[in-house]
Structures are given as structure tokens and as C-alpha cells.
Length: 573
Image (tube, rainbow, N blue to C red):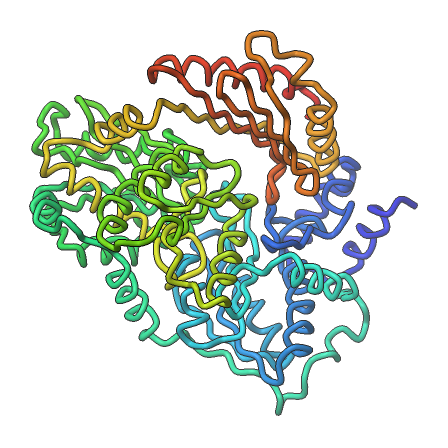
């Protein structure tokens, strides 16, 4: 009997919740579906687990989360005499229920738990760990994925997502757990030694907002404050956790309720995301409901006094922030590379020049797949920009290494092209609340000068050179397609791009084989990066194209994007 059928048989014999039992009955004759769901246990790594919800060992459900949590509890009991964690969750379907299940599993095994009483952003969970001096944390979230997904992130006592060493130890502990064995329930701690489950104290949110205020800069305050009084903002939490955090943070900057427009149909916590099926603010389509709301409220789109200057969107767990800018009569979408470059420029202009820092003393971090434009900005202001592998956990690791060497104050800023940003050491994960504040400060400063963020971006391009970036992905659905993705990257290592690139000349190739990431550099100054996603069944493609004008850079980027899709999208999924 094949392995997946043996695993299916275990689940079929188990006592399952009614919804999982009904789902299992529906697919029991579909061998392809059974293989995808039972071919393995859902992977646990440095990003924890993420996947579609449903029945099966390769899905997110109460059983796979319990199995993972048993491994985490063993790790904590081996490491600490008495461990205490915080558990947060987003607004997704089942997130609260999953968080409560995880809390009970931990408590039953002697781990103390602080559990948030409402959906909470990722950066607040990370902040809470150090604020309450805890031993780690867990966040139930699938970030920006569609409603079918959920996930499980694990944080260490620094507030960082766990590194590869810790993840491997926990994974090995998870693998030995058998939640279907007869004496599984007998492995609980005795009632006298159970851990507590308590609500996170309200003081944590107060401390978080105070940390945001302390970390936000307002140099050139006269110009900025003048602009903030006039700035109109449209905000949508995309039915996520930002609803109870971003408006408060913006009001703390002095934004009045009269100038803050909330997208009502995306305000309530709703994991089905009814007006935004794919709640990822990286994509311009996500803003269509906001623009529709603005038109309804203004009654006449030609009245500029009633039109917000910027639209801010945060994803369901509020660690990402997307931005659109009203410029020359229409809303212009800015991608993560553009927003990150604007933020870094703003920080350097308004902070670094006032610090009298020695060249290289201040550090900024970005992922390898993030725009190299920030390196040019850093050179101007004497800020060293370092690249790390994709995942904010790698940036958090670098921040911790600085702290261990007593150099924590060297950290200035970090961001990834996937609209994740961090300024300050108060949390160790990207923060959409903080990013929203920066978007408002930047737009306010420019409004006082009669400019927009699009104007400033053009000025940056004129100073440092035009660069167009495109990020896209080839999406797969079945677990067996993961091998296909890896083979396509191997083909690039084998010369696929070099042999098929006619219009552009591939100058050199450098690759990070241990991360299965391909980098190709062209004589024209362009760059292509290809890597499988670490959390999703996606082959991600990153294009960086230069030009003497923005139009020329856009044209080259489009041609390179089409070339890569032609080479890699073979219709095999």
C-alpha cells in the first residue's frame, strides 16, 4: 500500500470533527486529492507552517496544529524550567479557534500562555514577547493568502521568527509525535502542573503605541505638520487586524477624523474577505474597493478637495502595507521597492544628516530580491546596505547579532520588496502600522511643498538612475509540483537563460545554491532572480531593469518578464 493511502487510513479510522469527516467522505474516491492531502505532513520550517485548511496531514487543521504544538512544547520544556508564550491570531476563518486549541495543548503540557482576546497584528505579537519578557510566541496567520489558507508562525525569546537551527530541532520533535496513538491523551501534565491561560494585559497595546511614537521621526516638522493638517487619507484593513491599530497610530500623528476615510465594506473582521478575494496589498486590484468607496463618498471624482491624497491598505495580519497615490487626476500604485526606496530616502534626508554618523556606521538591511536602488541612496548618506536571504526572520537575525555585539544602535531601516518595512528595534517583524505612519509623514511633507510621492520618486530616479522592478509568480496547486519548481531553477543553473536570451546579453551568473536561488546579471545592467517561494507553491520571478528614462526601463522590464515566463511557464501544473 502506498504511503499516502496508509496515512489516509489512519485519518479515516480516527474520531474527526464533523466538518473534517464530511470533507474526507467527499474526497475518498479521488486518488489525486488523497495523494495531495496525505502524501506527507505539512512542512514545518523557519516560517512555521502555511497551507490550505482542510482534512489531511498536508493541510492546516486542528490535528496538524496539535502535532506541531506538541513538538514546540517539548522544545520549550527541554529548554526552560517554566516557559511562558504569547499566542496571537488574525481575522481568518478558524484563526481564533486554532489559537485556543494551541493554547490548550501548551497549557496541558505545563506551558504558560498569554492569549490575545482579539485579532492582533504580527508586529504586536513580536513586540509582546520582549515587552513581557516571555520565552517566545505563536501567531496563527496566513498573512496575505486567500481565504482557504491559514498558518502557524513560531517566535523565539528575542521576538524573532525562529532560525533554521531551532526550526530543525522543533521539526524533529514534531516528527516523533503520533496524535493517533491510543495513549496520546495520557501524555498531558498532571492537573497540578498545568500552565495558565490568561489574556494579554491591556498595557501591552499602550506600550506598543508608545514605542511607535518614540520611533517615528518628524524632522522638518514645520513643513510636515503643515502638510499633515491638510492631508486626506483613505485606509482599508482588508477585513484584517489593522482596524484597531492603524487609525489610532494615524490619529497619534495628528490626523483628524475628518481627514481619515475608512473603507466601510472592508472594516469588519471577516476571514472570507468578501470584497477582496486575494487580500494582498502588493496587487493594485486590491485597491478597487477603496477607489469605489471614494467615488461614492465624493459623488463626483472631479472634486479634488474631497479626494484622499493617498490610499493605505494593510494585509489581514497587518505586517504589510500597500500604497496608492493620487497624482495628476488618478491613483497610481506604488510597488514595495518604490515605497521602500521612498522611505529610505526620507529617513536618510531627515535623520542621518542630523546624526553626524561616520560613513558605514548606520546599517540598513534588505533581501537579495529587493531593489538595488537603495544601495545608491545609502552610498550618498554613508549608510551601509546589506542584503540577506528572503524572509524577515533573516533581517531580525542580523539585528540580534548587532545587539549581541553592543551595536544595536547601528540599525536604521529594513525592508523587503514584498511591502514589508521596519524602522526601530521595538519589534522584530515587519510592521504595517509603522509603515502606514511613514506613508503619512512622507505624503504630508511633500504636500506642504505642492508635491506627491510620485513626484519625489521621479526626483530619486533622476538622481540615481531609472530602475523598473517587476515581481511575478508561476503558481502551482499540487504538492508534487514542488519538484517541478526546483527542476526549473536547476535548468537556469544549467544555462537555460544563457542559451535562450537573444535580445539581452547575460554577462555573468551568480547563484546561491543552498537556497535554490538563481541570479542572472546582464551587460545592460539588468538583473533577473528566480526562486521557489518558501511558504507557497509558487516560482517567484524578480526583474530589475535599468534605462535612460522610465519608459525605457519599463520596456526592458516587460521584455525580460515575458522572456522568463516563456522559459519557465511550461504549462506543467
